[in-house]
Amino acid sequence: MNRASPGSAMTRWVCLAGLVVSCSGPQAPANPSLRPPIWQPPLKQSVYLRAVFDDDPSINLGRFFKQDTQASEMDESQAFPSRCSKAFSPKLIGSGGTFDETFTASSGVGASLSAPVYGSAKGSYGSNGELRVKYTLKGVMRAQVDADALARCCEAAPDQCSGKYVAEFYLGDGDVYQFIGNETDIKASGSYRAASAGIDYHNGTAWKQVTRFQNMYFAYKTASVSGQGVGGGTNLCASDWQGTLPQSLDGQYFVGTSKPAVTDQAARNDALLNGRLQAVQYIGTAIRQVDAQWSKDLDVAFGNDATLVAASAGIASMVKDRCWQKPTFTPAGTVATALIFFPNSEIANAARALAAGLQSAGKISVKDAEALSKGGAAAVTRPVAP
Image (cartoon, rainbow, N blue to C red):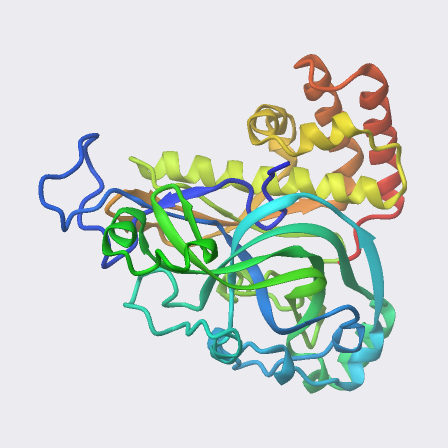
């Protein structure tokens, strides 16, 4: 079953600088140096590939990175335990789904995997530490926050809780790939014929497998804490919300990113839709955590993007855009990016709206709709841990 994750809901087409000069027109360009849009998997926000995969990374949950740590240096080994790390405790959460996404890797992680990153031409895939990860998610180890203890620690020692911290680890099976070029060019060159078993061709692109993992914690997610507590600070939009999602005890933030669009408004609408789809997955995770009756039909419905696009319209008023990045203009069109917030207090209402939408579309039974609604009501009292 393929489905988009909470950080990014749908596979996107983009034009990569250096590989594409023009993306317009349905016909193949006469000039072979001109390429159609190059496929790349969607970026999973604030998630980083680990240098070493293992089966128990709990000792590193709640460890902090220095505030000025760049993505190229975002290596788990650089995180340090602070006095405020005691406010975090591990919580295991069952999860599932098969994903094909982009993760960020530090230069050190890339070197350990023999997949150099940050060496690609600026603007092309890999120039910002990107590696493709195809995986089946089995579970999440999350740093659950003792809000009172964290607030007391942050007030007493602000320097001990400022910056990013390790918030989650992802458990699963999968493969890590490095982008090596256009499928047609790679096949024509014959460079990888002998190693064809390690090459994955997908939507006109070629990827070289650099490692495989099985039942291991392979990646971690960061969150931010300021001296005012989780998600503290008054100027939210001025923060690095694209690099590190703000955290809130009252709900969940998402980064909604559009596909390249013809107009600014179309791009904004698509970014909002992308945020809603992530909110839907968040709601599903919250309901699973309260041990609600979750059937296979619900699993299928929540794994189908087309189904969720229609169903998510019912929660549009509950998902709020908080900040917008200045639009990015690419040869393929305008790309919009927004910081989206979904409040935990709306989980019950959202669950009822989703249940009604999925049932009316014939995707789930009356029994499943009732279970989804009841699960939403229960999740309000036990929301997803921040």
